Image (cartoon, rainbow, N blue to C red; front, top):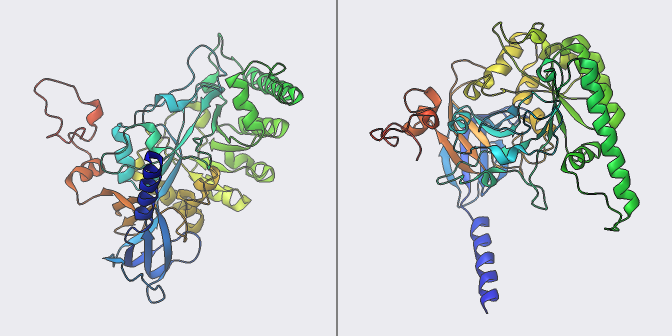
Length: 440
């Protein structure tokens, strides 16, 4: 009887969710990313999904839809950052340069105020990565910023999961000067590639032993989380997100990817413009960062704002990233604006904020554009997304508003000021965090 009641309650709750009242955002200029811009459009969402999107005169609203007027506003998909360090993530430690099995999942603080600032910038999906001080630094994690009232309580509340409920993420790798530290770490680029190659060979042998065991537990090798992760990469189940700057380092990554069959996204690529044709020939996508001021590391000295245009002309799928806190997530759209200023097409630049990133995370069927059936992740802006004067007014995730600039508490994260970084505030006996916009 108890089992019957439990099943009945579950079915009842599912029915309620499925019958949530539709919301119709009427009159906005809609940038769906896939398809033409709709000057006077309507977006209808119900529950966590998009029901329909199209010209207002052609969209038939559900009878019970709640109309929300958004005339003179712009609606576009939620933004996607393919390379973020929000939440204080850390995976591999200083004991060695290759630690693929370590999980960044186990070190993320979901109450980090950086997540709120990301929502203020219109970001709805992040690839949270460990740092780049290791040749192989550990597993990344893909998160959706479900910051509803009272959520998230733990990292589990914002994870992307597959149909079996397994959390999704990639594998962080790096080369160049970051990991050339001497001691247990390599001192040259040649040694760096050697160490990576050697580890993938071990993983290939590990996989062969598992296959030869044929399911016989007595013949299986001891489980090795490091090698297991590399096997997943070679099988295409886990995308490698690879930090790399110099043109020769980029070519080394392409060489290793071809040799061991792992799928890869190139990140940063300061000198990617020098080898754009080679990147295109390999069919490898790139996630680039747009920094408009001098400084940083020597190997990034040839970085140029024209990289986006050059990659686009070569036929390379290109997305942008913040590398937050290197760049502030609140100003993510500025990256696309700078790329357009340097010659990249508007279409490719807007895709670089949305759909291109979704493809690099294998999430293009769920996010990245406004289409019926996709997740209801979108933002409402008060002007053109490529204008420096434009503000994100609202951010919606799965059909629920998670940022509202008109709310003073949310506005604090958008504009900064005392209390915006509450997690960095001192905990004095006489300091009222609630009054100062601190943790709620």
